[in-house]
Image 1 (cartoon, rainbow, N blue to C red):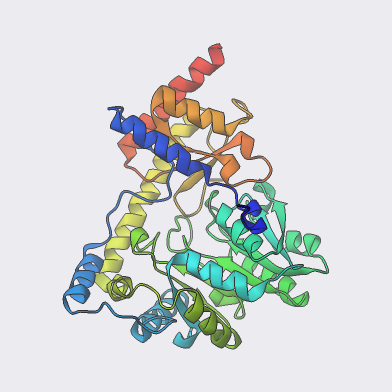
Image 2 (cartoon, rainbow, N blue to C red):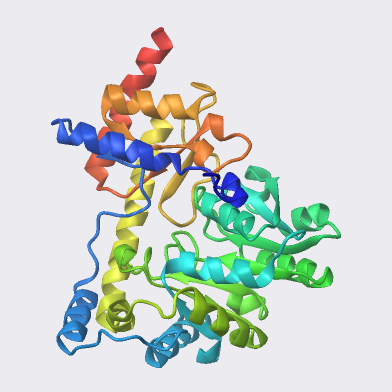
Length: 389
């Protein structure tokens, strides 16, 4: 039977096939170094696990309000006060099943058939796909070193059309790890407001910044819609919990959507997440951020020895977006062969970029320094063989 036409806009996430192949090689006894998936090797912080266990023992297994536990919404608002100096009304915080739940709500509220959405290229593919499922038209704007790998105010102004309804940013971004400053966010917000549009900002890597303090659009664009998550900085990937900060006027329609789309966020995860904001847990998370910083610097140093280090190092997240055009114009084949010949799993750029993905790969520095250096040694051996062919 024919499926819905809207599925044609959703491409497969190629890295998942590569992960399956890597896991199959591991099962066959090969020593695979995983640098493909956006999930560090740290476990969920013990304070969060203990809070989840206590909630389960206390019988907290029933539905919560559709927009989340009031205590958790208050805790998230307090987080913005401590980190960003923003006095945020907890009613503007909507807790969701993962950042994907937040993106689903935002896309359904903000765009419809005939609307156009501006988005950087490269970007996380689900950002494109959710907008396409809402039947909006995507205008992907190629970004590079000249704009700091971000969709800046000049690019937004240049590419805005009469039908454009929304501009979506990601800072720090996946796959490049680059950030927008408070000044840049303010400038983009001003351009979007001047055109009567809305601004949606993906900040799920926002706590993982290495060269400057974290910046949130909540600080400088008061009417922005801001997505965040407990997955990356807080180490709760499998708990599936995120949130959306929205203007006050959007709370009621988004509550209606949440009630109908997912009823409520996962109860156990919400109770566990309350412990993520305790001082001891935040200290642990900062130690992990420092370790990721160390891994980033070690990986960049190793890549520099091969002449592959990017001209602009990633400022956040845990990825390096690598130009391999000197070695291939088929990133999928390149990644597949690297896995088969050297047991190193990295992600083909075509997962993220509409243009130029064939000549880029993404490396996640989500394992320890020794393994990262071993991975680069294997990559060096792989490139040397290709050079002799």
